[in-house]
Image (cartoon, rainbow, N blue to C red; front, side, top):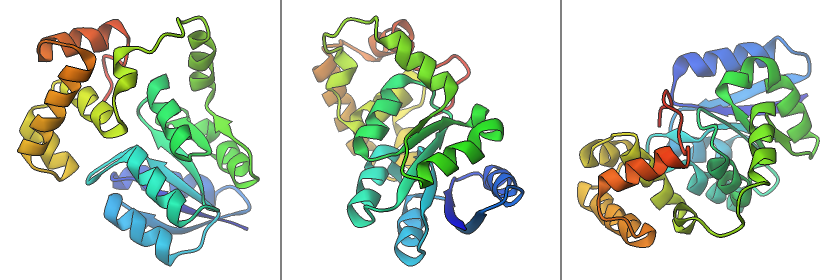
Length: 215
């Protein structure tokens, strides 16, 4: 029996994931969490083989959360389940220690296969993401400006580009507005951009988020 933990800040999503796994043989949902703090507490208190982790929950940057969990529980396999279909997010997640990356639009058809492969020690990438990786092989090898950002800076950058205000970002990340403003300044400096509008144009030009994407 493969024990699975689910971490997502949307109750309906957790219910849906639990339903899919419980209807498939060989899985037990051993616990659920809804933000960064409860996820850390759950992984510390409950033994499991796989953590299905939403990349964007209140309180912590998803990539930072992956890194901390892997430091504390190196044998726990992490399957990222997210709305973010961008290659850059997937690359950062894998570098932090994730074993799989699945978009939520693919979850209904690929979740069982993804959890099974990750639990067995393999690596899983959704079909949609695999296509993006293949397409990226034709891109120039030179480092792009957004690739110079830290994981937290990249997260803040995407939120700014998606139209969120400084106060909204601060509230969702559980930090002060001053801290977010500091991140914004660093982002502009590292990417050599003059203002927010330039960040938005850059994100659209490099297709760092879909028109209907949510952060």
